[in-house]
Structures are given as structure tokens and as C-alpha cells.
Length: 224
Image 1 (cartoon, rainbow, N blue to C red):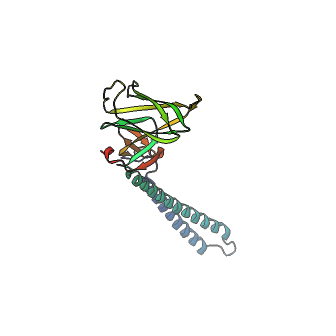
Image 2 (cartoon, rainbow, N blue to C red):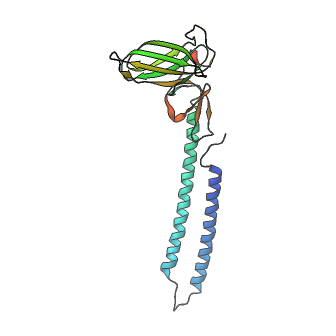
Image 3 (cartoon, rainbow, N blue to C red):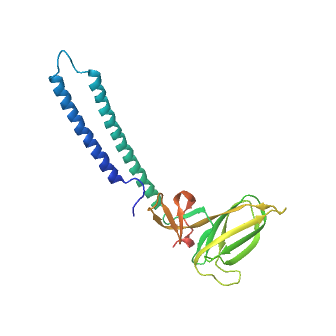
């Protein structure tokens, strides 16, 4: 799989070529300068300030190329480290902002966070076609929590494995709306490096590595 962005091999070749050209030009410049010094007119000597400035210019360009090579090496090292870190997520249970979850082996889990005590909460779960398959009402404590759905619909029938979405709405005792955010929870099975940043595969869904808010070893009954 290719990684978008800076290509290490092409840039390294370009830098090496640039340094070779600079070195060749510098050697040529020194040869010309030496010849001029040997054959200069004693009554009209060369302007030392001029060729000193040229020497400084060549040296500055060479130093810049060395700096670019260092930065390129540092970038490649960082990208390699990022890949290693991303791969370590495989087999781990992650949490990221979202509404989807995979129903598998009789369970689908979402994380949620209520900004305040919710006296009247309504949980609505829809299938991939957008049809409501399950609803539940109750109350929620302030703060984070988890909602586990066994896959049984409101009609009593067990729903097939697949992708489902959740929506949680709530109000307090005064009837004022309380915001309840939801998060996707699942076990990472693969990592995609084809984009600008690693993308984690969780069930049939995709999660940007930067969107992950929690990583932990999954419970024994959720490992697959």
C-alpha cells in the first residue's frame, strides 16, 4: 500500500543529484579561480571581495541541501513511526465520535456522554437502510456511559448482523433538552495507509486515527 505525501526515494534522489551538481560546479569554480589567480595582472589584481562572496554563496547552498537531507530523513522516520503506532491498534477496542456500530455475535456497543442528568431519554436504533428497528426509553446519569444492544428488535425478532446507527435524545425534569453525544466502539481489524493519515477498519466502518478518543484491550467476549 502506498502512502500519500512525500516520497522518500524520489526526494532523496533529487537531493543527491542536486548535491552532485553543486559539488561539480564548486570544483569548476575553484579551478577557474585558481587559474585566474595564477594568471592575474599584478597591476590589476582580481577583486577578492567578489570571489569571496561567491565562495560564501556556494557554501550556503551546500549547507541548505544538507539541511533538506536531514529534514527528509526526519520526515521518513516520523512516517515510519506513525505506521508502527497505527498497526499497534489492530486487535484493540477503540472509541471515536460517531453513531454507527457493528452488530456481531449478538451485540453492538456504543459509548455516550450526557452533559447533565437525563430524566427522559429515548434511544433509537436504525439499520443500514434507515429503518427504525429498536427503541428504548429511560433515564441517564450525567457523564459517560455505554449502551449495549443485544440485536433484538422492538418487535421481538433478532436483527441480522451488520451496521446500525444510534440516536439518543433526552430532557431533564423541566423538559429542557440535554445534549447526549454518541461514539462508535469496536475492535480494529485492519489499517489503511493509502490516505494522508492512517484509517482504522472497525467492522464494516472506517475511522480516522485522529478521531480516536480511547483505546483499550477489548473484553474477552468481543474479541474475534
